[in-house]
Image 1 (cartoon, rainbow over the protein chains, first blue to last red):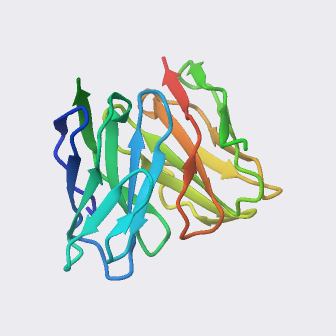
Image 2: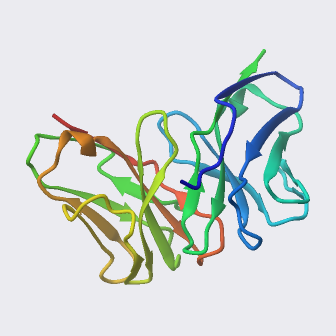
Length: 109
Length: 113
């Protein structure tokens, strides 16, 4: 069953960079990687997406390996408000987002 | 601007009852998606609309689940004869088109007793 694989939980100190890894070994060559995060009792919030080049926006950076089988989301200066579950997903050829169980990121003061 | 809204936010149904969950997408968004999210899991795709056309309903778990978007804007997910295993958060997302990022609503938490 095609899914993404992420560590179930991670801690990060406030102000430090949070690096969240993801394996998506079943991804095909033209399928984009998307990252979302979900704060308790809210819907997922879009963070960033990419195909094969590294991407950066005001929220985060996305590093995708050359073989596209894994990626890393980087939050450069984590704050307490970044505590959430982070999901790595990819969009398959049917426009379905394929999700895993996500990483619960806890930012500690 | 207004985001995706869903109603009700919480719904408790007795087993066997029918429920209807509403989604108001962002105005002008062509694509609309429904997902089911079990506790502690990522969302699971249910169905997808492009305007009023339901292009993919492969994720609907049974024929008790039915979705519609008759005028290409508001969508309703209907579950007939609810079962306990239907208890979950139902998320709606909209997108300007298929390959753009999806914007999610807050979800409807359905509890079947």
